[in-house]
Amino acid sequence: MRFFWMLGIVSLSLSAFGQTSRAYLLQEADDYFKAGRYWDAFFRYRECAKLPEFQSESKIADQVTNSSHAMYLTKKFQDYNAMRKYEPAKTNLIELISLNPNDPNRGELPKITLAQGAELQRLAWRQNTPQATADMLKRAIMFYHQAIREGLMDESIAMTIRQCEASIKDTGVTDAGPILAAEPVQNGKTVPAQSLAPVASPRKASTTPPTVIILPSEQGSSTTKQN
Figure 1: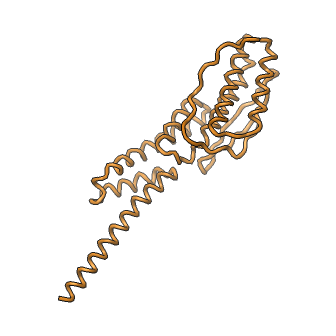
Figure 2 (figure 1 turned 90 degrees about the horizontal axis):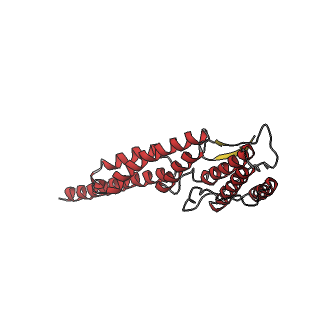
Figure 3 (figure 1 turned 120 degrees about the vertical axis):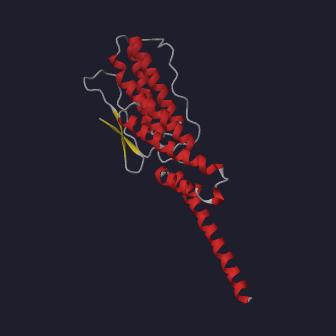
């Protein structure tokens, strides 16, 4: 009789241990997802979905889908960013951040906005009329202010804005016309960039205008380089 009593205690202990171990699998999947390790998260969530105690939780099935979609968005964002196609890169990144506010690429959002402004500033003096040049510089200023609102703090941005304002005066245009709307500011917090090279002023036309290149690193962050 005592043997069966001890066996029951051991069985209960093993069952409790098994449930604890399986709960850890779900926590591990969540940790992978928050860290942006979507490949690992995808397979860990799938493993959890096969366990009886988790089959009633719709969250796990949703996270299997979210992990797969996050992998797709990350790849699209990185590809477009590498090609300096900033609008689709930003679109994919904003959607990625909406899935995972902790995504390690979230700090790239204001950097892309900065690059959009720098590109407009660089192209401003290629326009056919002073009016078009002034309008493009005003749009560049708008992107620079948006980058600041998105969390990018760098003293060179304020200097660049002043340079654009001075360049508008150089065009002789007193009314630069309406400014086209930019991308809406991403809700939520973004990580400020650690360092940024100042953007060159376009006050004088140049045969080799400066460009802003975003170079992805192994850690999912990037630095902005000026050529």
